[in-house]
Length: 273
Image 1 (cartoon, rainbow, N blue to C red):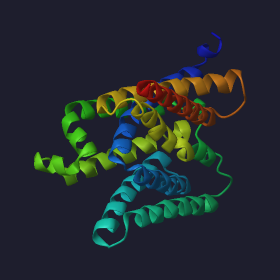
Image 2: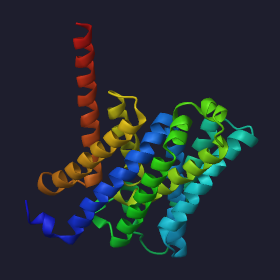
Image 3: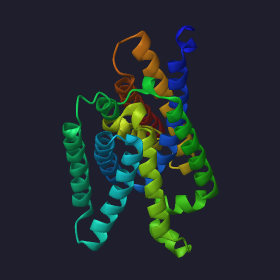
């Protein structure tokens, strides 16, 4: 058991697990409570187009993906408000466009692009020192933002109208938080991938939400569950079954979700009795 922890790549993976848990726990709590999971899915898949463009142009795909994600976030809001398009239709359109552009640029890129599957499905064992620095900075900024602006974010998450009555600049805060969500998703793509990211951003929050509606507890509980699933997936992938850790992380989350639902059912029956 001690030998695997001596490898630098596994140490990086453990640090990435912690930082990803913090990022996804904080951002995911806002996404779930604010009920913008579908919007987040559109943003995540739109970033695939940015990744393909970055690889085609020979620039950092994370930077191009971040640009595409932010553009998608604002495009969804603009189309639904100004162009008379239903929000769900705008999300679906941006979602499909991002994936189509990603495939197009992948096809146009000379040679075989081996890195694209890692962005789709993730591989936390390939996380670099630069990725860790980016995740650490993002995690720190999120903690500072959600600590200093906790009440404002709380009002926005649960009751937008109440936030307006309290004098909150709702539109500006929502746009700023949407940008934060977009950037957070892009920087965590390398760990679990585009196809699996939404589960890490929603399942831990759903599990905690079975037992509490307190926003702070949802954030903290989501971080702990995400960390447990991340480390559990890593260890299972290495010691038990040769399956990508990202897949095992999601399977563990679904297992925890099923267990949490059973516990909640038993508690409700016990309360009735």
